[in-house]
Image 1 (tube, rainbow, N blue to C red):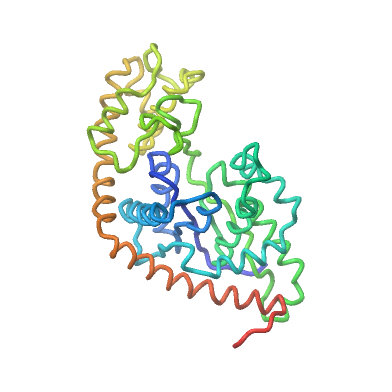
Image 2: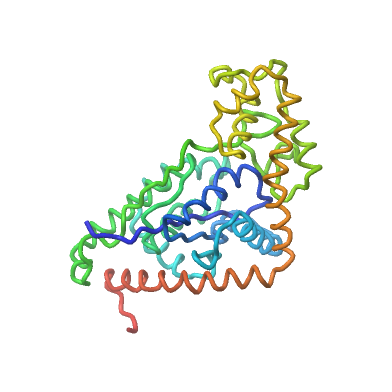
Length: 346
């Protein structure tokens, strides 16, 4: 098997207000990876248009996600931050992968079924082929690792299947073009501790989501201190005190969620949270969670707002990142074209 430079790729969709779940489940986890890997962080705006978008709002959201990356501590000079649509090689490789992937593979993708709902015949072809573009996002950089959540594992498995089939189908041409072994890596999932799944503040059985009609179901990253405090105070709980051990959270989804949020924000195990607050009432625990949330999210939200108010700076970061991303992506797509047998200028 060929040796590949270790590289991390991850993307975030610019669709709606970023909330605590996006931050703890993804963006906050990107930051420590910078110390170990070369990292490419992408605002996947081409994925966003698989469902209808308002153009002015999409532009705002692209900049907001970029601001969140930077405010969280991602270093856009040491690593690459850009928006997907500026690097056309993503789309070119996605078409190649559309011809490598099998319809049966796509039919197994559960996320399409969930997003398309009952009216699948009216869903866009882009939504159906979404996982093929996701594979191209990763493999145009020949990325070796991707930080994944539970809902993305199936897509990463498909990425590996596509890479394996391309390597097998074109093995002779890959060798003839001077590549030793496989052309694409079989990208590995990057597991960073236990899966972080932040649930709604109004219903602990549902994932925190921007699509929930109640703004009290989520903490938005741009919420001010008073709003954060009000949402936590109104967060659904149950009449029992907090337990002293994790087993006592079973069957108590709202309590479990709030303990998980506290642990994630403070960077400590849940057992430690329960050791300190177990046996107490939710009022005292919520007060501590408010202080912690405001302390952790207040500076982040303030920096995001400052950056969003400077769109020229945000755009300069994205343009610079796209230029550097293209330097990696273009040699990949050129080599793919040679392997496929396309004629091109050299």
